[in-house]
Length: 157
Image (cartoon, rainbow, N blue to C red; front, side):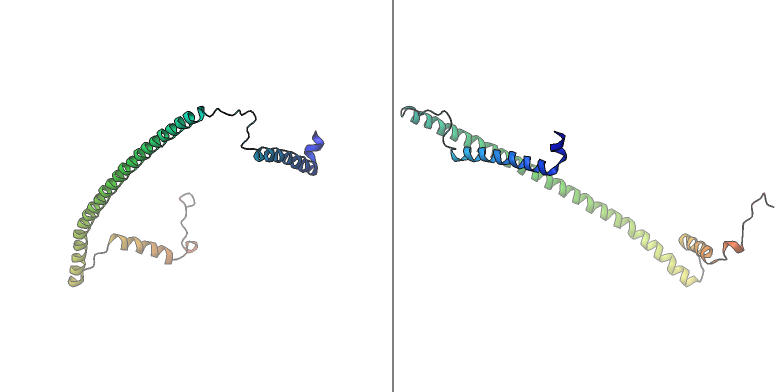
């Protein structure tokens, strides 16, 4: 058994044989699809009654499927309408928040612009916080290297 599994050529040949065997069986079954193994003919009197009951069953099944389809369509329309309503509500909330943010930002922009024009006209200089931070950073970058200005520890002194 180990020889069969270890040798790939024997394994491929074995698989090909098994698949061809099943294909032959499938072909034999497909050649005679209308002829089931043990089918007996029905009498002529029973056929119309059976056909009528089959037609009624088919009509009933089609009606049930149509009802299911209409229920599914109605559910889809209802959910779509709910989704559209929620989207409109969210858009309205977004617009309201944007208006509120714009209304809050407009007074700040006016306040910032007025002192700058007053500073320029009066000749006084009042630095802003961010400008001071930038100045400290640039002084560290452009200042002397650390090797020329070492920081000694307290224990060495």
